Amino acid sequence: MRRTTGRYEPISWRGKVFRGFVPDPLPPNPPVDLSGSLHQQLERALLALGRLDAISALLPNPELFLYGYVRREALLSSQIEGTQSSFSDLLLFEIDEAPGVPFDDVVEVSSYVAALDYGLGQLAAGFPLSNRLVREIHRILLSRGRGANKRPGEFREEPVWIGGLSPETAEFVPPGPAFVEPCMAELERFLHSEVPGGVLIRAGLAHAQFEAIHPFLDGNGRAGRLLISLILAEAGVLRQPLLYLSLYFKTYRSQYYRLLNATREGGDWEDWLAFFLEGVTQTAGSAVETAHRLVGLFERDAAAVRGVGRQAGTALRVLEAFRRRPLLTVKRVASDAGMSYASADRGVQKLVELGIVREITQRRRDRLFVYRDYLDILNEGAEPLSR
Image (cartoon, rainbow, N blue to C red):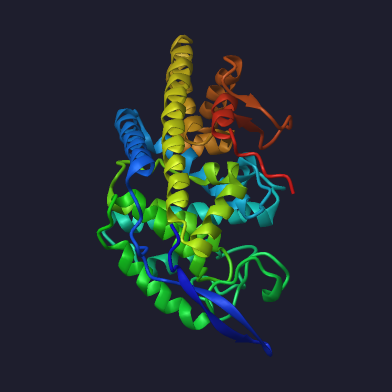
């Protein structure tokens, strides 16, 4: 179904004139056809979300899962933009005692974690999802490392383009600076409107529109993927924010970009939404499976610790620290578990004896220990993309 999706407007910049695409306000006109296969995909996605919500209600400590999920989402979303950090790099960066972690890539991932945490916290406190909040999140996202000089938290006042070395050779040129504010105001209004198909359709449409507007000089991809999480969180479709689509977008990266382009070039919203809803279905199903695996892992290892006798109490407290953060020094274990260094050291050694954690540094001071089985589950699919 072809639609009028927007218009091209001239952009004057550095003595040159070229054209940028100004998208029409949402919702699409004519409306998205939600009958047939797309309706069935929407039903499957909602069912998958319901299962994820049910399992999250049964988790003994949802915060343990959120810690890993949020960090994996941050890592994957940043990898789509080309960073080469690993999950271990991020965890090491978060430990003050662990030196030598590559700064530029991992600081972007760490800033993503901070931006997502801030956004979810603001929504939980009752603040609405708005352009103001989007700008605040972007400010945190680009507060350190690469991009810190790209006007964090401010809508751009220069043109940008995607692909190619210049606007003339670019694959896509978003709207010129004069149209950014009006386009984002229209998007904000759409975020709080009633949309046929509900919140998943609204999130899919809004993400594609945000990417078409490209309101910032840098970090638009990461901010746009954050927007999905915030839309779902504000709507309250999940009791715990456990749905993150960056692994799906990373796995099908070329299709992701192709379908976003198709919404602009021919108004093909149905194919984009089918792809988006399939991502929700797959991601929610994977999250349920991962939750079951982690519950099984934690129960197995806790049972092994309870069988050690008098040292079980201390060792269980240490195991709880590794559940919260699977890569730790003894000093950090003592701090997180609220115990003396000597007690933490004894507990860590007991977990080493049981084969639950192992040392990875082989040095006398500031030794690092990893809860390997837990980290391996979190790390699935989070390997850096080849350059």
